[in-house]
Every structure is written in structure tokens, then in C-alpha cells.
Image (tube, rainbow, N blue to C red):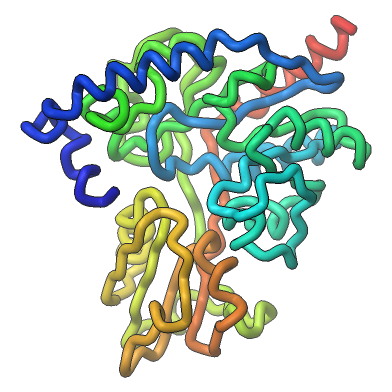
Length: 329
């Protein structure tokens, strides 16, 4: 996909050639939106995006899960398990195999304090969470296009650096749904870059977001944590198999680190040979990549945990909505 992504930020001869195909994609997407959704017995909050690639949905889902738990709610998480071999629904644990459950699902299980269920059928995954645990609100990670599941609140995360690209649907552009879809969501969260993006349609509440991370955790010995200063002057290689690898590399540069960057496709199934860099003294990676590398990790492998830091007001918006739903029962 990397080659075509170069044509998604503007109108090029390649994207123009693919435009008729995007019309067909749009027709299929519209038919899915027409499906009659299934409503669950608990409120459903969807965290998603309208573009292909990473925007920061998973860190925001983790932030929201912690925020709701701190306020007395009992969240459960439903996700797709993308990249896993088991269509689900399946309970995901910190020890689950990402090749079976999906890398993002395992990351959610490792970092959250609630049950995580993965499955291509998000309704079945969410229902499993409700039946097996005491959760009273469902967080659906990457569920904006899963219209079979009724939702009470939609949060759309947008990459502030890439925006909506050329504004065209797949495969001529990066959009999963038309830009007009943003007019129906409840909140827009702009991750980094231009935190305003005034040209976006709709009147949804808008919030900025940053991803924060300053310490590295060793994959072989998770109890070993080091700050940036420990890596200065070392021969470092950095790998990223996420939707926007350059975001990770820029984060490391802002930390003052010098390194050789290696970008891989999103959800890349890492093997030990992928990380064989002669002379390397440290190999840095994202948490999402780390869940796939633990089985062959050495003392050279380090992950950078990051936390979402949304602008003020997002938590209040979500809590007000949940309170109003509780009163309506």
C-alpha cells in the first residue's frame, strides 16, 4: 500500500485513474450504512476514523477507558482483531498471540484494565463482553464503519498532519467514508499537526490531542525502564509498522535521538530477521509492534509506551452523554 499512499495527499494521474473505482467503493459503503443497527443493553461509544491508517484511535480508547473507570464506570472494549487469524468473537488477554487475535487487540488487553473482546462481528464481540463481565459501557475501537452496531456516541480521530488527504474515497484517496460523514459524529479529535483543520465539515465539538511518551521499556525485561539520556550516543535503529511510521520517527527526533529509521507496512508481521541490524546497540519500536516481537526479543529491543493527552472538555462531553442516557432509562 505504501506506493499508492503517495498519491493520496493530492490529485495525481494515478489517483485520477482510480477515481471511477472509488465511486464503486462509495456505493458499497453507502449500502453498509443503510443496514439496520443492533442496539445493545449498554451504551456504546465508538472511537474511529474516516481515513485509512493510524490516527491514534487505540491510545484514545485506552485514555477513555481509564477516564471512565476513574469515574465509576465499568467499560468493556470491543475491537476488530484486525490482522489476526481468528474471526472471533474471542477474549483477548495480555498473553494472547497477536497473530491470532490481532496486534491492536493484544495491546489493548495489555494496557487496559478491562476485558477486551475481538471479532470481525463487532455486535457479537460487544455482546460477549456484556455477558462475560460486569461492564456497563462498551468502547468500540475502530468501529466507525461497523454500522451493524448501534452507537450512542461517535468520536472520530483525525491525523492532524495528513488530514483527509485529497478528499477522495479508496482507492483513489485515503477515505473510508465521504468527508460529509464527519457532520454526523459527536466529536472530532485532531491528533497532532494542525489542531484546527477549519475546513472539516460539520459542527461537532473539536479537541486537540497529543501522544506523550518519554521512557522506554525493555522487551526482554519489562521491569527495566530507561529515559532518553540512556540512549544518547548509541547506534540506534528505529522500526515502525504502523499507519503513520513518520509520526513515531518524528517523536524520537523531538526526544533528541539519532537513529536509522526502518518503516514497515501497517500491521507488519515482524520476524527476528526483520530486526537483524549489524552493530545495533538499541532497537526502538512502538508498543503495537512490540507485542509481535516479544517472542524473539533480546536485550536490544525497547518499546516506547505512549499515552493520549486530549484537550480539555472531551471527558466532560462523554460523561454528560452517559449521564443523560442513564437518566433516560
